[in-house]
Image (cartoon, rainbow, N blue to C red; front, side, top):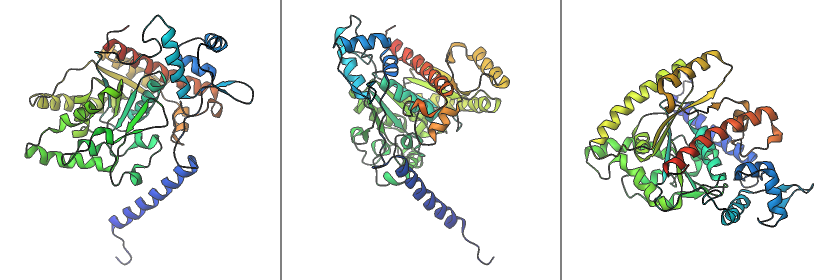
Length: 392
């Protein structure tokens, strides 16, 4: 046919155009240097994050028991994430309850590794992973977020463009590859969130899926399911919690995350199609984990939990399916749900989370409802972390 073009050429042209458009969008959204910065928090937000009453926070400032912070033009205090860390340190020295304001690990506590997983795309794995990582960091934990999805959605949310920035390396793939892996510390990068670091993803991670069958055939050691855990062990002393955002497939990368994890968080939308897909995920996962256990994989978990996401309580069929899950899995289903909200999707248009956007830019009831939902879910996860460390 005259004038016909090869499909690979058309796809390449579209990919190049999209890459340029995404780069321009990032630069427009995050000028002048295309890197994100974290906003300041109000007194009410700071008090909630610290776990104290706003009146007590004001009195602590009045009594000069905590560091002073910047104010806006109307004299209202504004708290940076670094301010919150300094205040936590000051309050910890004054409290009779060790760990009340610095809740992280103590001697003998096991690093908590949370793998957020599901077989199906669109179940809010990345949304859950980034909000969980950010909230825990703001709550005083030292957090490492690891993106093992070659699509790099979590990495993108941190202000990077995986398609262009990591073509020559710099992702977690470099730390887990079979040939000449680099130290994990070399790929971990600081983010604009104090207490929160990132091990980024990029398309090169797909090479791990391609290389592993050959490595298995050649009996290369360490085997694929140990490599991510060993990389995490290299930086274990630097963190309290690791959050792993898994790809929407049950491949070698997801399996490596499940083996490295101490807690598996399975996100599920309460619909028949999504629950049927999750059934396939569970069936396949059980079989594969059983196989790798014969090769020395440890399958000891602190928790396996199902998190209901994109939940609309007013939707009758969704409420019915949520009840079905709770009846079936009882306390394995988390008490709190991640509500579907336009606030979350609207924030995502500028690659931000609800902890990054300003409340005044949204319908306040919608924003508050979404934040309350996310805070409740994260609070429940925080309880699991503390329980794993033997604390109330």
